[in-house]
Length: 339
Image (cartoon, rainbow, N blue to C red; front, top):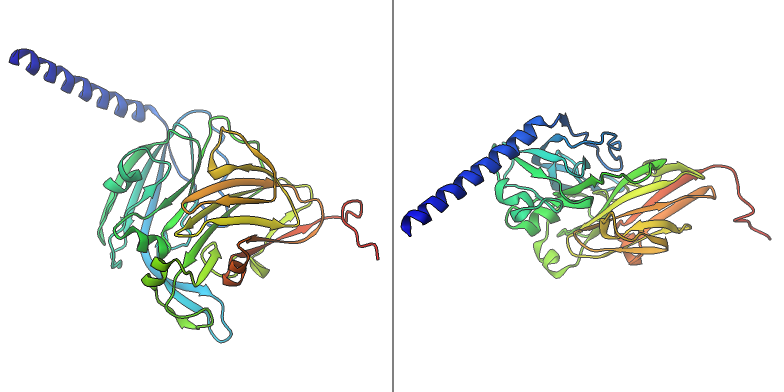
């Protein structure tokens, strides 16, 4: 009996080793390419190839000072915890079936340990279990992209709440094998909250308030990492008749987003970032949970400036507002002042 058990264990170990070797051989046969990383509001180009590949991407975690809000004499500053020095972090695009080979490096100037949890990853911690790095360290991990959709990623080093609240998040699109039809304009927009000890009228360096975060009382609710990131000179620009697609994420860390664009109806919404299921049509406002995402499309027909916002409407005063400037010929057949 013991001999049979030893034989069975040996055969099982051989099978596991063979499976591991075959997996490595399959990856070795796949072409290797570098991920095209873009920063909000820009989106990487769609992937044209029809085969799987090993997609290599590099992220550096660092803690940097930046402007959280404009001021009269000087901006409100904040020490952000970041991926690649940006809040939100880079937009990553891969194809369903690809292997993402991710190298994550923690800057030697960092004070904190960092890691990454990708909601698109199948495995413990979404990758955080094998990517925890101390300042000055680097790790590489490989993840098979099994599910198409738009997904959040964020730091998951303890305490994960603080790492998210301080700016460590972004979006990854796992493009389906049969991709969505091309859009004329694509944008990356991400909502998040900041909790500061000082009020919104404070100018100079402000600091994180953990008790406010626990109480879920944000000082700021913003798009793309800061107040005014998508207004005035930073507004998005499109033309009438163009198909506009927004890849929208909401990291929270606490609040649900009621995303709305004043003056248009969303023709299509891929709810919660899922691709392959039912598509919602003719939507006025779409709910995006904390830690969730959505893909939405609309086609502007009338020129002018449109406001996108969180329709939990007082959040506009905290920064959750952006502008889309639409150029094109007037359409009095659709929109006209009579008297």
